[in-house]
Image (tube, rainbow, N blue to C red):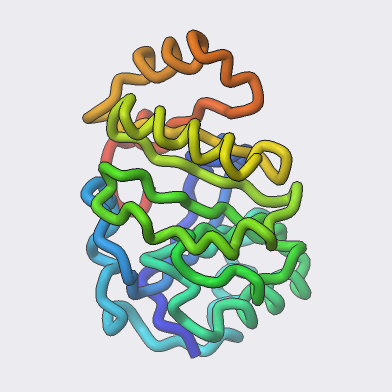
Length: 214
């Protein structure tokens, strides 16, 4: 059983899969409170419906979109999340999982495309990243830094260099649009010649704004 906040289908707005149709399974509960969070309605572990894994897979199968992302909240707060990943993989789905980086990712199957956040100082959750997770990263995974300011960008650059992160997986710098202009970050990345780091933004918000379920 899992606490499911919502299931919806939209355009994948972030990551290297941006632009593809994707069904999202948003699980309930989060252990962090980032200042820029766009889904605080999923904070509570008691929100949403307690749902059998089989029912979740049947719902997603009925939608018929190949790409599926498990998100939250923080999906790894729920012990059965790796089991959901396995069931979706067995059913033939291409599975992504987005996690805030504060919890152990080692139980998540390597076939899953793991998007692991590293919280920057301005997030309000700086220092939450579990450094042990670096050893579990593969070329199939991504690390995402959400940036409120160029100070965050400088910090993220240094963190990537210290841990040689671009040698392990794809790294994406994504600005919080209301705080850090896209052009300002892009110019900074050009000036610093960050040739191994991708610039990213939330495509779905450009299309629909902050609309829930988009």
